Length: 169
Image 1 (cartoon, rainbow, N blue to C red):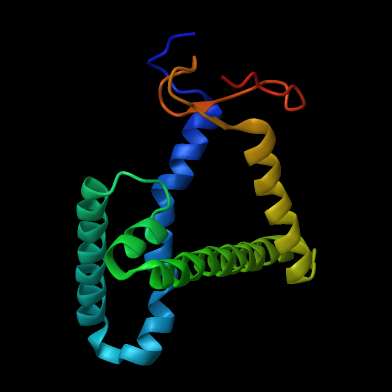
Image 2: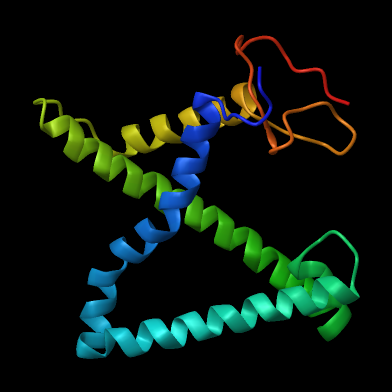
């Protein structure tokens, strides 16, 4: 196989990754319009500037503190152990809530799609289905390349047999 070509699963994964940011902007506009009204462009500009500042802070902190732990490590160094602990758990809670919200939104879209075929399922059932689907794909299909491991060089190894565990380095 030519190493300069992407497989179908790699193209699929990259497509989802490319669409996700625009989907986030498209689906939160109606909620923002409820609160901001005609000032939506200003609120999006201010939000974008805030995210640029957060990104800049992460770049600066990562260049000075070479440690795993992300928010916990950076805030522990800058604000002390107590605030590092609080911010680490706040980030973990954010990931948990975001994952649940994403599963619910995906289930809602899946329900609308299925209703076109006359099928109606409860949203929690579809949400659990999509969570299990993502877990299955993550656990059996993709492996993140580790330094020194043989791989295709773009960060994703694919397997033809889902139930054959990969040989980790």
